[in-house]
Length: 236
Ligand SMILES: Nc1ccn([C@@H]2O[C@H](COP(=O)(O)OP(=O)(O)OP(=O)(O)O)[C@@H](O)[C@H]2O)c(=O)n1
Ligand SMILES: C[C@](O)(CO)[C@H](O)COP(=O)(O)O
Image (cartoon, rainbow, N blue to C red; front, side, top):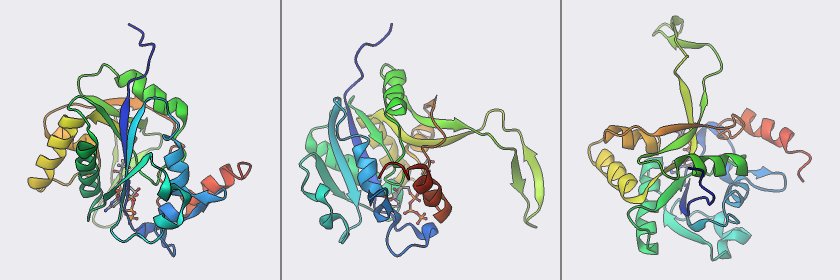
């Protein structure tokens, strides 16, 4: 069956990190890219989507940067307090969605604030491919380089078979109740959850991998932003 209409969805944007690996003078989501902050570009990936039900932005308590941006007065952007880890911030965002009226089977997309280069094609492809999926899934990219496992001595211990290795990206798309329950249970159990899919996996489910563009990169280190600034130099 070809689905004519994309499913409606909520969005949670974890944006409460400090960006330590970026070694900048402010959290990386507030660094400039083509004349605006990285965070503003990321929000723009979703705010005009016709199927968006609502968006929750998870910010660190007392974040001094967000109030200075035009988006701070945008009624489409609801706020939630971030937590110590990314997963805590996401859980806080899910609780805000509950207050906003999210229903059990509503689709929720969680997308890193640090990924401003998400294409509309990848977003709609994720929505289309998972619209009728019983579990949900994530954008991901098959490993493209030879992979090495490091030994304690800092030398190669082995070359890893990469034929079934994928890098997890975001958005990650799951039903509200299933994601909320899996994430809350995993955190209570002390499970290290670095993405939403790993919480669903811990709950015994198998999220679907949806291949996306490798340039939907997470701005993590200075060279990542240098590359994207160069790529976007004609966007200003
Ligand atoms: N307690 C946290 C930690 C991270 N994030 C968000 O999760 C996304 C992915 O995390 P990461 O790239 O690790 O960001 P930071 O934690 O800020 O970076 P670092 O690990 O280098 O400090 C980012 O948009 C970040 O703002 C969050 O909302 N709350
Ligand atoms: C969610 C994520 O972007 C998927 O690759 C990644 O796990 C975030 O990890 P980070 O260490 O919080 O950047």
